[in-house]
Image (tube, rainbow over all chains, first blue to last red; front, top):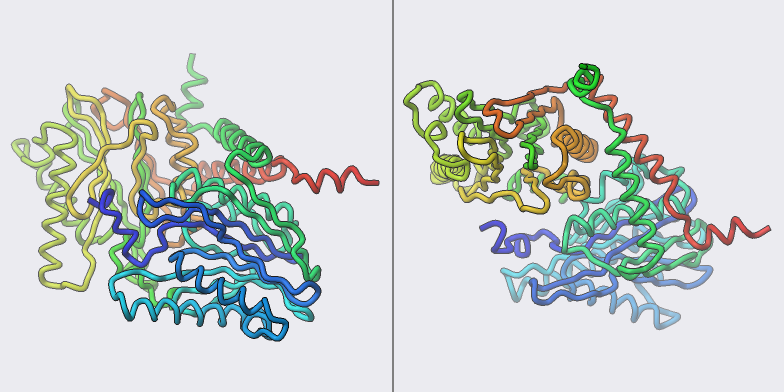
Length: 262
Length: 262
């Protein structure tokens, strides 16, 4: 019954997507999958990584999970803001946290408007927003469907939305404020790859963005299809690591005595 | 708001515990944590691994997650069945799947009785049950709070209850029907350890049981406190594996060209 009725898709949980952002001393890393669906017969690939930039002034990367119409409404409104030089919203936000609260307010209002007309459906969306505004430090924030926001924790400086649990252990072990950016990016891809293997609701292409502190423009943006050679190399390397790691784990005491016995 | 109000504890999700069972060609492995709580000020350690055995006749291991009073009611009733040679219930179940359905019926009835008097509270419990009845193959089943049951999938022969996602990727990568029992046990402990690191709702002591096919009595039962030397060795080995694995992952193309440049 749990298995078949797809209750998770109606219960306020975000059923698909996995996005994460990492904030280190040297900059920011963003990664996202591209799977969306409205039921098993309507599976699609949509980018969940949205980039907004006024080069030399401000850079934002927005990652989205949850209801696709809510996230598209939010992104569409921000796109319009960036079309006009005298725009408002993210183009004028004084701080990154202000920008996050602005996205949260938009998302919540869009959701609440739909809910007012369709009480039983779920229009929740979550976001990660990160970037830098000239004169300030780079930062990442998580935006909840309720519109409220949080920063990344200082010791383990990463945030996740969507199917967050499968890929969390590797981040917990590896990511610190002093992790080099490219290493953090590799860790993000391993986290995403592990999640894709364990959950069909997360799927390729994978997108990766890297922001170097004070660059005030996005340093790298990569998109990996499922069969991208570099991604396959990464997967093979990690699989070999795990298989080797299992082989070298300590033996149980009874295995030692069995070996020692004649 | 999401962070603070503990909504997960009221939403029908099992908020604490992590238990898993693995079924290979050579036997069964069971592992469980011991953390329970009713709010952050009431955190305790209870065993979630319950063993029932009529040596040479039938062996069951029952792992429990969810509402503690429901699981204790179920275990108490089974204990009483095993006190009398002419008992009923698990002592007389014709197959392991029958035993699972019997546990499911008990658990559901206990839950529904409480819910009838307290509609807003959550009395859900989930179980893993595994073992062997003489003349039949060993097996594991998952019992849902609704009372229904499923067997393990053939290709990836493991089942989990509680906080299942953190520790699933490692099982997905390693566990197959031909995995040796001690290797499956090590993998189960790594899965539990990763979960404990990422989620405070899962905690020591860890219990491990190993059942060798056709033994008709439990082969091994271990209980590891947080500071058990063997467990610390396992954790150190796996941490080293992950750290090394990160270092040997392929470089990004731009890192290669940076290295090659003068």
